[in-house]
Amino acid sequence: MKYDVIVVGGGPAGLAVAVEANKNGAENILVIERDKELGGILNQCIHNGFGLHHFKEELTGPEYANKFIEMLEETNIEVMLDTMVLDVDESAKTVHAMNKKNGYMKLEGKSIVLNMGCRERTRGAIAIPGDRPAGVFTAGAAQRYVNIEGYMVGKKVLILGSGDIGLIMARRMSLEGAKVVGCVELCPYSNGLTRNIVQCLEDYDIPLYLSHTITDIKGDKRVEEVVVQKVDEKNQPIPGTEITFDVDTVLLSVGLIPENELSREAGLEMDPRTNGPVVYENMETSAEGIFASGNVVHVHDLVDFVTAESEKAGRSAAEYVKNGETKDNSFIQLKNGDNVGYTVPQKVRPANVDKMVEVMFRVRNVFKDVQIKVTSGDVELASFKREHMAPGEMEKIVIPKVFFDKVKDNEITVSIVKEEA
Image (tube, rainbow, N blue to C red; front, side, top):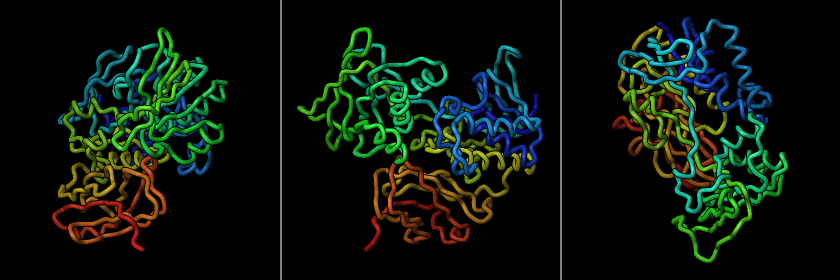
């Protein structure tokens, strides 16, 4: 069972990769998806707001996914659903997988693209103290129960974390008749998109408690009370600031973790800042011919950005199948400077760049009237003004290829500095 391109994951990233690889000449393409249908997380995201960038129209999650599924169905791309990938052998470019129909399979690909998405951080990951009753859900799990399974998860709800999924579920639970008493955020700023703060909290009069966290959950069989406290600049609870909420449900929106067990087992170089694989400018990982895109590389805020990045990976995979290895592997390291959390890509091969390189990153705090500085040693390569920046909103800059001639010691640093008066 040999293929030009094997795509691991049939969510928004994998769908975009497969369609784009097909458009660019890859003929024998396989998409492997562990769920029973394509679409990934989009299938449970029944709210609108998707597609404004990519399709120039407002869509729900299932509608967005269906557009790509229809594109895929017009091709000869093969799909294996309800199939679990067990291992990826980076040296032999082999995928080991299993399903009920075919049993154990050894699949060979000239190129492999990893698009496993991400999972939610749980209560255990952040060590919330208190009892262990029913009624504590991750926001995404609650979203699936309500939107797909048709189960109402609770009547009085408190949400921990202001990530986009939590904010959207605050609105969703309100629309279903639940009382959402508040959204509690450890940071002094929200971690969600501004539009979700407005549309999901402010429009429904749901209070947002910044610099607060849950310090106790009480309950026997079901959640009965939740204690929230204000935190200091070191995120430690301040005595005397306790607020007790009478609720039966807690939803956790406390971060996403790229799903990279396969990447680590394959021996790919990983970035501790993103918890995803290190990638070059064309989304190739440290293993030649193996690419990655979407939330498995770094957590995105908009699916439209996932699509754009994944289309780049699909084009690159098709080009690799056509042309083989990159002839010049010398690279420039991209580093994060002051107030920048990470950069993607982490490495750029100038010989592989046509005109410019897009760099995605997130900032570490909320900023107003700042400049993005791109430097190499003591040389400033470029600067970009920004009136507002926040950790919840991914940033993008473009670095022209002509700047690479000025690079010192093969390093470029991206920093945020206060705009000079």
